[in-house]
Each structure stands twice: as C-alpha cells, then as structure tokens.
Image (cartoon, rainbow, N blue to C red; front, side, top):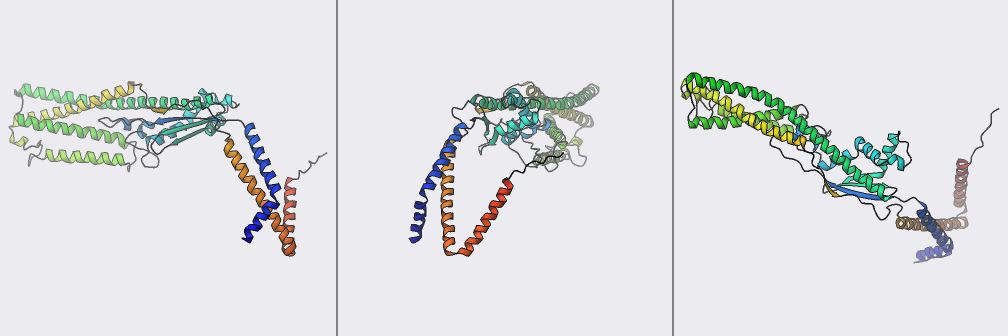
Length: 409
C-alpha cells in the first residue's frame, strides 16, 4: 500500500507537467490532422468466373496464360493448384493491367508525375491499390486516392481492364482450340474418306450389303470406345507439351488413357487365338472370309466416323468460344465515391497521441524522481548515471551540429 501511495504522490507532484504535456501534444496532433491532405478509399468486389465445363476438356489446355489457370489444368510455377481468385488478384497487380489503368485514369496528371516516367507512375498506383482475396474467394479491390471520384474511377477501371484481359484470353483459347481441332479433323476426315471408299469398293466387288445385327452392335460399341480412346490420347498429347510430368491433371489423364487402351486390348483379344475380335463373344475367325474382311473394314469405318463426330462437336464449341464476347466476371460491388475520408483518421490519431504523451510524461516524472532519490541516497551511482547522461548529450550535440563549409581558394 505504501508503494501505491508513493506512485500517487509522484503523479500528484508532477501533475502540472503531465497535464500540460498531454494536452499540448494531443491538441497539436489534432491540429495537424486537419492540415494533412485527405485521402478517400473506394472498394469494389468481384466473384471469380465460373469454370466452364466442356466434353473434350481442351478449353483449359490449349489456351495459354490465364486460361490454363482458371480451369482444371493448373500449371503454376510452384506445382500446386491455384485458385481462380488468386490468379485474378495476380492479374490485377500485373504490369500490363496497372499501366492501362494508370493511363486511362490519368494517375500521372493527378499526382504531378512526368508521364514518360511509367515506373514512378506504376509505383504510385501500387501505393494507392490494395488487392486481397477473402476466405470465400471474393476478390476485393481497395483504391485510396486524393478525391472520392478518382478512387472510384480507378477501382472500376481495374474491373474493366481485368474483364477485357479475360475476354481476350478466352477468345485466344478458343482460337487455339479451334486450330488444334481443325488439324485433327483434317487428318480424321482423310482417314474416314479412305475407310468409306474401301468399304464401298469391297461391297461392290463382293456384293456384301451388311453384317448381322450382333456383329454390327459389337462393332459399333467397339468403335465408340476406340474413338473415345483417340480423343483422350489427343488430349494427352496436347497436355504433354505444356504440363510438367508430375502435374496431377496430366497424371490422371495418363491413367485414363491407359485404362482405355487396356479395355480395347481385352476387346481386341476377345476373338480367341487369332485376335482381332470385337468382344461380346463375336470373333472374326468364326465368320466367313468375305464376312470377316467386310467386318474389319466396317469396323475401321465406324471408328473414324465416331471419332470425326466427336471432334466436330468440339470444333463447333471452339468456334462459339472464339466468337463469344460475353462478360467473364461477376461484379459483386462496383466502386462508388466514398462519402467520408479514410485518412487521416482523427479519432485514432488523437487517442494515440493522448496515450503516448501521457505515458511519456509519466515516465519522465518517475525518472526524475528516481534520479533525485539516487542523488540523495546513492551519490556514487548517481554520478555514474550523470556522467552517462552528459556523454549522451555530447554525442547527440555532435550529431546535430552543422559543420561550416570550408572555402577553398
């Protein structure tokens, strides 16, 4: 209890200095807060684009850049899956997008920067912008600027430039996919024409009209399976050039291709010793020689026909994707000019100044009381502290002293 009384006695003794210092510093900070230039923060929020499903799966594979990141194939440099929201945040802070936003919103003009100095303009825009991703995947764009209108304009310009970038990327992905499928279609079309010509010629020569229903059904099923295996193999070939060997999507696709090949091998060996069967207990060796040859040619024709049909379906999808100009973003909140400034925050500044000045004044009071106690009770120890303080003052004065410039004749 005596110690508490001692502390209170010190505070009462130094109350004048504590109160005056606290009030002066607090009022001074309050006055400065009115002088400081105001800044306003506008916020926009986005939802990532939905992942588009397609039968062939090449939409995300054949397109570079953001196309590969927003779909199933994740080709991040770190070898792990990256969410679409994080990729969007990375695009927003890219040099390409930021330069366009700075140019459209005249950031250099507002902050009196030489327009030629793009690096300085980009740094200024970076200081103004905060891009973050919430736990729910919402992309938040916060822009702090001199005026409410400029803050909202810059934030909304980020949205427009990101949307433009994603539109261009989607069109590019569709074009790449279309070109890839065009080449595949040309190859399959040639093979299909050759198979059809061979089948027709054989029918004309040997007067064969068709095979029995059981053989036809087995051949059709085999042809569909063969065409699906061909498409998966084509997809794997497309991924092989751009994906790392340990990419999860690439490994999963490789397992699918191997599964198709195993199933085809079982079907092809279902005919017994001579092979070339089509499964379902149908064996070409049990057919007459003419019928067996016709069945083989019909099988080759059906395989090419099924493959061509599937490829053509994906080719049409690629053309639609290339020509489409639909919005790719879902805007949760557009930025609006804020009504209140975000800086300076006077309440926070005043409270911080009050606590800091009050604590510093109390510390100064107790330090003085302690040194007075040492001077009376422990003169030797006080002398050491006094000498240390004098050395500190001398060193500080030496640092603050301005040496006169010498003139050389």
